[in-house]
Image (cartoon, rainbow, N blue to C red):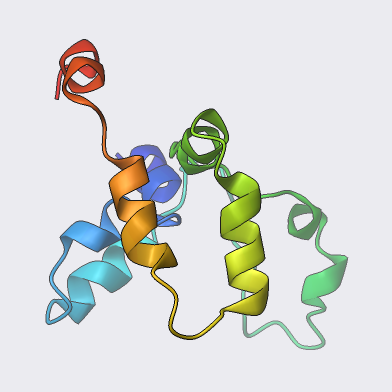
Length: 111
């Protein structure tokens, strides 16, 4: 299951479900990598991370957060909030309500 774990752990899907007190379990999830991937040896002398071919590849994630934000037409609002982080706004609580599925959407999704 390393491929499943590495795909979901990076974006927090699994890590959000692990209690903060379980540090070692979170570390195991975050250190998972697919079997066909060969990790560089960090003790290699003069290792230049930025010269590795893999550094140019974006991590693969099985999470659909970006698609959910685009479907609800909130991606630009979220990006703007993250850039400015205004104090005293109700953006985060409003965001939570906007992301909740309506009863018909929830039934269609099987949740």
